[in-house]
Length: 191
Image (cartoon, helix red, strand yellow):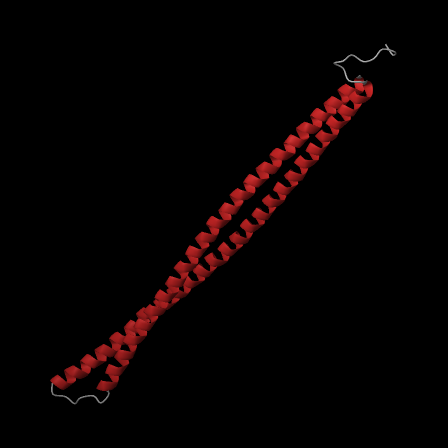
């Protein structure tokens, strides 16, 4: 058969090997492209994961800040009963002085001074309540920011998972294509 021309439906021997070479080089290019896309997706997944970690760190900072502010508010609130007790003592002294005057006794000289001290205690109580409320408001704001950071972190974690799944899928496709190509090469080498 060496002297006979090839059949019309069959390519010449050189054309057949050229077509196979072209086919295998195209498959290797596809494999390389799949691996490249897989690496890009894995890189995106890593970037999303890092962003998620940054937001988690920020969330922890805001949560800690909220805890500290709540503790400060509690400390300030704990001072209010002490001032109220002092104010009651002053009011009792004022009543004793008024009782002494009504029973015909001598009016104590520091009655007006007691009124001023009571008024200052009232102002101090209001100031402590305001400061405590301000700390509570700031703590609530920090907690809301913390929850926003957590939601954002979860979003980035989900995106990272999607990108990683895509990278794994592309990598497995490339592996399957490599196995198929190796199978084709062994079949061609046997002929």
